[in-house]
Amino acid sequence: MNTIHADKKTLLEGPILPKILRFALPIMLTNLLQALYHAADMIVVGLSGVEGAIGAIGTCGAMLNFLVNVFIGFSVGANVVVARSIGAGDRGATVRAVHTAILLSVIFGFFALAVGQAACRGVLIMLGDEGHVLDLATLYARIYIAGAPAMCLTNYAAAIFRAKGDSQTPLLVLSISGLTNVVLNLFFVLVCGMSVDGVALATVLSNVMSAAWLVIGLMREHGWCRLVPHKLHVFKTELVQIVQIGVPAGIQSALFSISNMLIQSSVVGLNNAAYPGGSVIIDGSAAGGSVENLAYVVTNSIYHTSVTFVSQHVGARDYPRLKRVIAMLFLVSFCIAEFSSLLILFVLRGPLVGLYVQGDAAEYAVKRLYFTLSAYFTIGAMEVGSGVLRGMGKSLTCTIVTLIGSCLLRIVWLLTVFRAYPMFEIIFAAYPISWFITSSVYLIIMAINMPKLRAKFSKPVVRSHKLAALQEQEKDDPEGRR
Image (tube, rainbow, N blue to C red):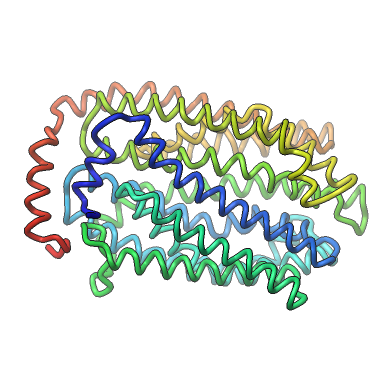
């Protein structure tokens, strides 16, 4: 039975490592499948024979992340607030947080749609896109942004499922919708003769499918996270809590995207100087970024795991177990980051790059991979550090650290080192340097805040009695209507 007390028992009791892996693996597979589906977009659009199509999609990445992910970042706040309410055993707060989060997702989605449609071409021009690449990128971006409401709703609904300990449902839904995306890609490009417009339309339709499925799943829940449409309302207390965590998370996503947009602009500048009218460097960078993303999304699964596990343990005020959870999260992240990055770099690099590009473009893709994957354990530490601090409620701290340690550092790097040595390799050396600095600062902040949590939780909650009470309450009201 999918009840709330079962969710509590799953995450807050028993061996830690198996539970982390059981929770993280579905997220990992979900992220990996989504990355593969996005990679399929670029691979399939390459079959269209339209010159610059792969590079056009690649140049849109940072901009689309900026326009959409700033609002999706609020889903982190929803995850933390729902998970913390569950960990504290507060049924009313959980119900209010769920309905507030879903309504916010719809509002943010349509706002992202309006802003994105108005700004996308101007932003692409600022990044240096020109000629046919600009036209293709604009077409792709406008269609992609049309799906922003469904994209936001999907992310918020998935965050609610994960907050209560269910990472399997998002895996199932996003896997099937992703397969649908690939089938539609092939249909629109190979059968209908479309190009970037076809893969963008396929993405929009698959997002609509996953959003509808997840919302229906929440409406059929039998626990505290059940979605009841007539209860949709922005509750002030839960809104403030979600905003306190979500705004910094959204700003952090925007800051990362801005720095990545500047990096993309530098890549476009090198390409325009070396290959006027062509897209060799742009295509190579886009291909390398897509391959690198396979390692990132696997590592990023531990970030989402960290947010949920730490949030529930903070809500339950279980300091001794929280320390063990955090240590295990760092160990798992290190192993996953190193294994995935080295596997791609030394075993799968050639075959994967070859799916996208050949010749000079492939050489640029490989150069990017060497600079980004060689020290990937640092981004693993950064992801866990960010997730742990957000679970502790230090979302603003994460944003400030990211601003200084990653975004500003990359901007300074481009304005100084890259300007002095304008080479492709110099651009991407900024990534591992910023990851190392940011993760080191996260570790220092955690070391400072852990003793404060211990003092705060000096009177731990005895969960055994609470679980018994929750079980009796669930029997009396299994639909969660109170």
